[in-house]
Image (cartoon, one colour):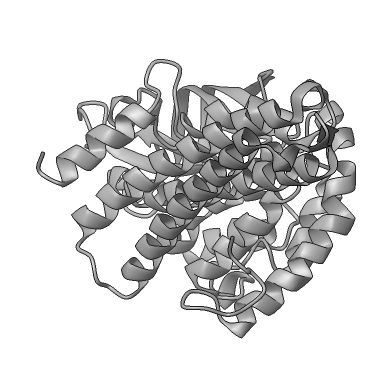
Length: 389
């Protein structure tokens, strides 16, 4: 497997120095507390401030909003290292700002950037993105939440569901339909809704996995949102949402193969230490083959994902090819995660079914990454359409 401590085509000395410090931080400040946070159903707010001080929250954001203006491979380092704690809920909660704030940073006014983006990147506030609706799922163009202009405000009505960090979020980037007569992708805009806005109610959802991440169903009942909270141009939200999804899907692919790596390492360690039928489990061909198959799938997913990122950064692929390959990477990486989680639990045997192993937790979390950010089925359809199939 890869030696992630050395610089290579993708990761410079700066990347690897950051990785080393981040790995130590995760081992000391996150991994020992995962079980406690899963019981609580959320992360402590103090953790957001600590991760911000480490530079985790701001790696992709410009310096004028408190970021470090790093490249996408710096975000890959963050995602790979956070995954080592073996808890997708921790990664999801700490990463909800990475899908909620980019539209604000890229398209928002100077006031919105200063008032909302900067404190989120500093770990002082929590951000969420609210796009998915009860009746729409991955079909963003079908969203029904409305925002009617009334003087200096928009009146927001509708529902959003499966919103990561939705219970704790201080600021929510909400996809709304500002043109009531528009259909499909037309007339969609982004509004920033503050968490204490009258008329906003939140209901916590319970999940199969990601227990350390709070997830909410949001209801907007005549919420008055200042018109100045409009992000970018009115009616141009669909394109911004799609570009946001591309980055989200790449990060999901990274998280998936990194979680698969966690399963592989735990299974390998167990197989080398556990003795059965006169020798270590790793001495039996059937176990060795399982481990090789796991390593091969992780390698394939990682190589594809990093190549997509590198080629995009070099401007080598047209947008349709980038979107198609990103969709394929998400499917391949999440398939690797599913396979490795299943095999790891099998290798660990009874212990793999017990709480306390990372593989058991990841096994419960495999399905969410095949759904969030666009289902496998949507990803395949999207790739086909972009490739002209």
